[in-house]
Amino acid sequence: MDLKLLNKALDYLCCPDDGSNLENSGTKLICTQCRRDFVVHQSGLIELLPKEPYSFKDKASIKEDYLFWYKKSFLTPFIENPSATAWGMKEAFTRGQLVFFEQHINFISKLVPSEGVLCDVASGDGKYIQYFAKDHPLVFHCDLSVNDLNYSIIRAWEHGLKNVVFIRCDYLQLPFQRDSLDIVLCLDALVRGWEHEKIILKNIHAVLKNNGIAIADFHSIRPAYLRAFINEPIFSYSKEEIRSLADEVGIFDWEVFEFGGLPSALTPINSLFLLNPIIRPLTGPTRYILKLVK
Ligand SMILES: C[S@@+](CC[C@H](N)C(=O)[O-])C[C@H]1O[C@@H](n2cnc3c(N)ncnc32)[C@H](O)[C@@H]1O
Ligand SMILES: [Zn+2]
Image (tube, rainbow, N blue to C red; front, side):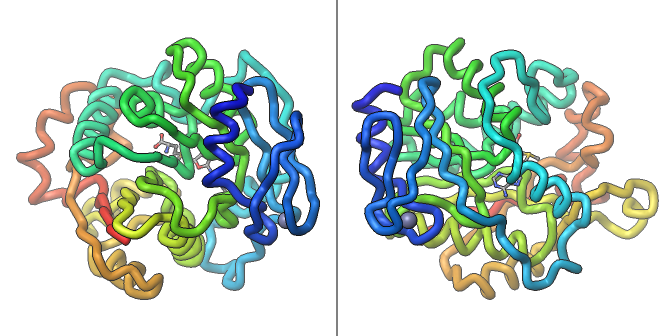
């Protein structure tokens, strides 16, 4: 991994177990407190998983399939695999999903400052960081999934992006220094249950610097008549619930925007997206986009 980039990244990273600074020993980072070492791969990936998975206090509030996936992913060792595929990868999108993505990123980019260090805490296939890495000097792609990281590393290389640092981490125990980041993104991830969303928002708030900005989105709860037809296997929220979540986390400066209209189960149908502005009063928005300022 490029040494200059690694040293730049070290100003923001910390030990996921105790929050202490890390020092560079060549091929590894070492915690200045507990002396645990963390692997740095040639590809630019840093392994910063904590010792143990997060233990939810209210397990019943979390989707069971997520708990299973989380534990399994946590225990999967990172092995480089240039032919990995990722969840929600842009290459597999239908025209309708592409339009959704283009409208989504267009909306979000208007809320994101054009300068500053940007971190995406659930970056997935990396399509959002590929966009923001074009004009932000240092970008962190964070994810737990070995496949998503492998996939995104190759795409960044293909796009000639040399300012992206890949972090294998747990967003429930983020390895970033408090008050350090200018911009944090968390997209399509606050869908697993109240405690899960609360911990992530708390972590994001902690690592943002003063006046830093975070953008997180939520699937919005639909009117009852639509819920009867479309049963999505994730949590969705009302504006009032998002307000309560922000209150519980202690976030005071925030705004919620409405985005889209079509239920995501229908997004593969190409041109239906054009109907969003007309159908939103009937269907509610697809997502609520939360912008918070620390
Ligand atoms: C639905 S995908 C969203 C990806 C991307 N933000 C997007 O909108 O296309 C959720 C992502 O969260 C990641 N994830 C789930 N649990 C995680 C955890 N505990 N720590 C870090 N990443 C996690 C998954 O691997 C996946 O890439
Ligand atoms: Zn440590």
